[in-house]
Length: 389
Image (cartoon, rainbow, N blue to C red; front, side, top):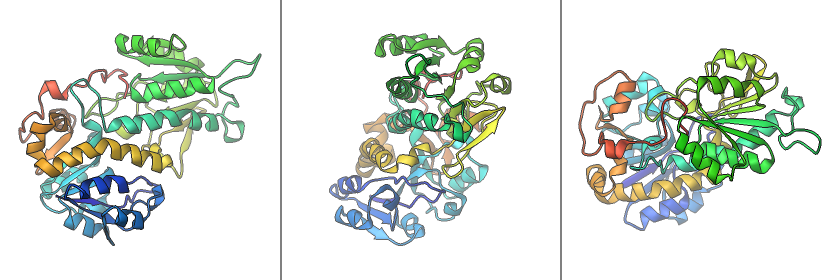
């Protein structure tokens, strides 16, 4: 199979779909990989390194798309890339189609593209193997970002999360106890903050209480409890996920009004539309805005800030699927690794995913083996009222 790695074109998007090590793994199995010139430079991977790994350096995105059976992206293709799609090819990346513009869906349909959303691939137990490294990185970045934004020169509360003897620690409330929430909780605890985690599943809260030996406070994610924590927290972290759909709105404008002046709200659900009425996407170039005196950080591709680490993690999780696609193709892969089915949004231009079709107000147009099977598509712990990502 011929794989393509285009250079990401969104502003300050420094991640790359596959590292040289990943390219080498595919090439050694007899596949061809086309890498756009400069695709990995921002993440620290030179063109020469890709060449040594067996990759073929090409000089335009058009050539990557034109030659490749499967295009491996990090973020959703931009409008400028839509015209480059080769009819019948497969595109894999973090697509977030429930909140994408209609022209993206139109382009996929027009070119009969098979679109696989990395963030939606799920194992029967609910684990999301390709989303996991992104969530781990985002969670561990959370205290780095929050600590900086809390500083006085930037308009923050001037609170040191760890406190000092005689001065209380900062309070962090994390909405969602999934991979991101768990990593954020650990990172904030290590920084010395007081941590509260809210989730809509009691079993998940019990698990977190055990993992952290009672060092965090756990609360059920109800409207009443959300109102309580937003009034006293120095930092709120939104880490909720509803697979295939827009993130649920859990933080209202009224809650934001009641937050402490200079408090920080990190909405890591923004790639699925955000979990607050006051959320709107920002960028790594222009990261924050203020509403009701509260600093909002809503960067969808926040993990691009540590592009090298993230690209390694992404490659590690993607490789088994890419190897399987190369050896068996889409339909053969569904027999070998049925979990891939949960990520297939469109097959040859036709909607194939029930939850996505419902989110878009459409009907499923093609039935593939396993794609809408509840034993594969189930996603434990990701409910519509604060399930963690």
